Length: 110
Image 1 (cartoon, rainbow, N blue to C red):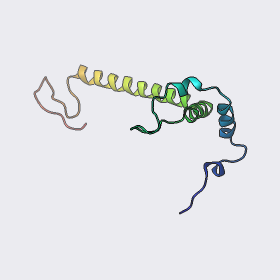
Image 2: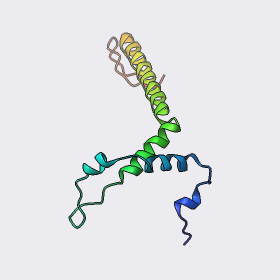
Image 3: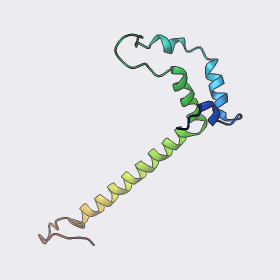
Image 4: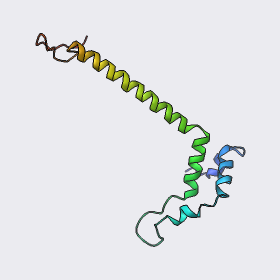
């Protein structure tokens, strides 16, 4: 079994090191105060707010939010295109595999 620490996997000049150093300097008391899990009681240990903050900052610096927005816009374009194609089929009265209301026949592909 090959084991290694996360620290050994990151280059010395990796941006994540800067992010972690920044997050360690933040006062996250308000986030820790809202954690209701208590040692010795049932339930999982919560994820450390410093980890979540560091992940969010790293993702923001890497442009993940922008990528999500681009993906959302692309999805909206695809939906609009599908709606337009459906509208065209509906205006014709049939489409591949759909019932032709004027002749009573079922059209297959093409």
